[in-house]
Amino acid sequence: MVMASKPKPPERSRAEAPRPKLSAQIPPVLLAWLVPGAGHYYLKRPWHAAALLLSIAGMFLAGLAMQGRMFTPMTGDLFTTIMTYGGYFGDLCNGSLYLLTVWFGYEQDTVPGAVHDYGTKFIVCAGFLNLLAIVDAYEIASGKRARA
Image (cartoon, rainbow, N blue to C red; front, side, top):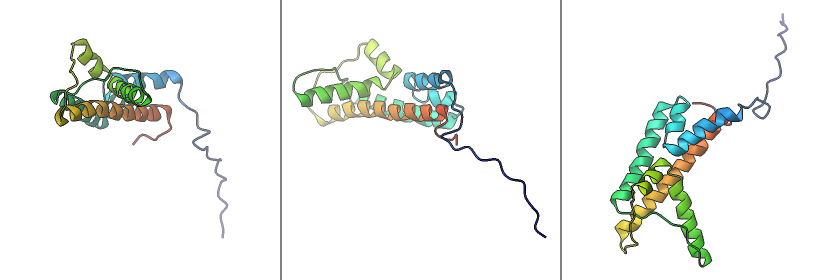
């Protein structure tokens, strides 16, 4: 004897699922930019927030300890423009780490040497890592990625 099962309601795909309001997406993105990991903490992911804060702030502070310099946008030839604006964007992605450092007057001259150069790269890479954390916080807040 075969029993008839109830017909299942059609499942809504991810594209059809209702998306959260923009007002629910803005706070985690702004918090993620201001303080590394704060967007994930706001989204109730404290372990991810702690890992992001330690890795991004640690990389930024290591760059400062190596006397890396902050980029300032310069124009000139195409290579100089792309490199300085790209580095400046990476610095800005550090959020409050960058803003406080500039506010307290941190400035390094361009000094030849590998250690200073690595310090500059650490600072910029910390900013781009924070940019990835910002995008991740946005995707979680907007429902594009499931909460783990």
